[in-house]
Length: 128
Image (cartoon, rainbow, N blue to C red; front, side):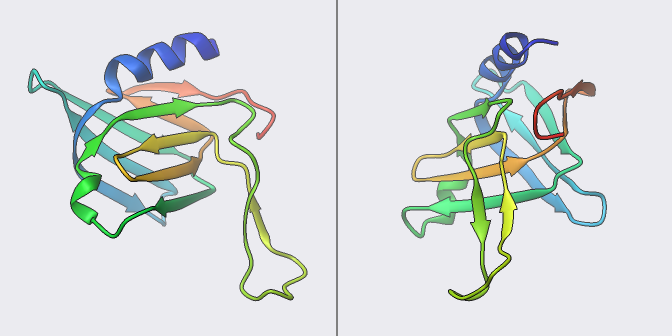
């Protein structure tokens, strides 16, 4: 599957009201269901998740109900890091390759596969 084909599926199915957002830390997955305006449901599962980052501009958790888009970039969105302290010499580095965009927040995910309605899309990227 090419980058163009995956992004086409994400544009087509990656919008709607999010239901049952679930972070499975032992299984390394993030999953949810999206209900579009026609009340059709799409199940999305990010597999082999290495990391995720939640970024918000306002404190309104209700805004996480409606997802505006899901984007995929094979080379990632840039490097993210988490350091416990300013002097931490070995921060945890991540290069998320998916972005879930909400009204005033985003979730960036580093994953090696994605399942859309049961169909697996293995990601051949420079991140693997």
